[in-house]
Length: 485
Ligand code: NBP
Image 1 (cartoon, protein in one colour):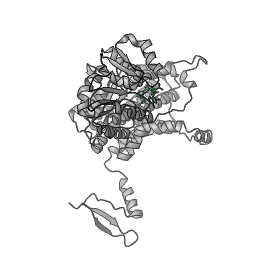
Image 2: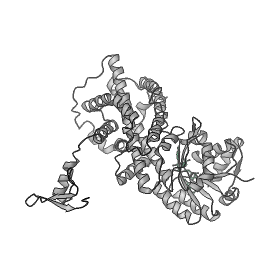
Image 3: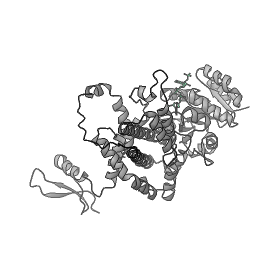
Image 4: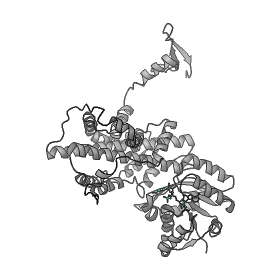
């Protein structure tokens, strides 16, 4: 008997992916550098399906049906290269190597090129949904060649999450496209979590409600248009009581958010592409600020608050209205963050020649992954209406959403500023919204300044061409060339 697919790397993710294949009736070859993990899988879940376990990579490869399909699920970075180097000599032309770890997409492009020289297909695949998703149905974002997807795709679709019977897995695009999209998914996850944290903070400080009371608010929100995994688990985390102190868990957890790096990669790439993903960037910086311990210590009690009197909600009705304002501000900011993320995918797709279908992205994020949410259906519909939509928030549906939220959003952001409550993601999303819809931006003045100190030239609103003012001379304007069409 030979295996349809193999998984090497059996820590939490690989082990659960292998079990997921087995539970779906696929014969799975399994391997781990240290055999103890392979043995543990067999001992604890060996009866869930057919596993062909190997101690050596040679035996593992030999246990696979051709063309072989090997999923690498090891710690991203040098570990992935080490496994690839060991695997390549054991494989034959036409075999498929899948890296399902969180690789940085330039590494995936490099690996794809290297493996192509050996006639091997390399598939960099994003897998989201954590440990639980890997076992019960993740969202899967495979890149690589279209040919490889023909045989690999059905297996991955089989184990992926399903929403309305539709698999949360689709072919994304060549080389690094899959890992790129997973990276942006994680960036959006950062923005989502920051927005949720800001909403919690505003309600907590604005109304004095306890974490447990706010948990109930999130439970209610999860019944409406904000319905999503992150809103659902926010209610659970806020309701958690610390066993040792009896306090709310959020009150005893150190307020320094950590990160593994995908948010940082997303922002770095957005800077390279020149795409303003302000929501994701502010969320990433907010984590960095929370961890800036010496700076926070230097500022605490020293920097004045200078708050302006704020009309805090006094009655229960006021509090309810305020909570509803925060909900709307959260929804509008969230729509902006997603719109920015999809802009980044569009820009990368053009820059790297990936031809990514953004509607399909929203579709495969509806289930299995951390940002799964009801409103992703709306994003898919928007891209179905116009595949080349230049700006998600300019789609009719989202124009309507923002219109309903706008006044509340402005009240929340201004109220937070007056009262000294930091809302970097709420505020920057509103600033982006006002910037992108502006008839005229002060960028014109920036161009004037650049021309003054660096003769960088500018274009005019009324004539084609490029111009420069003789700032140090008679201040006359000259046409300095460029496109005079
Ligand atoms: P880890 O990221 O903790 O990696 C542990 C695995 O890597 C073990 O199987 C280990 O083998 C293997 N490994 C290492 Br470390 N160096 C190796 C090397 N040089 N050669 C061979 N194997 C090596 O596992 P994980 O949390 O299951 O995550 C796996 C991948 O999935 C990562 O890329 C991660 O970023 C990604 N991911 C994780 C999640 C999540 O929620 N955890 C979600 C989505 C994606 P050993 O047992 O012999 O030490």
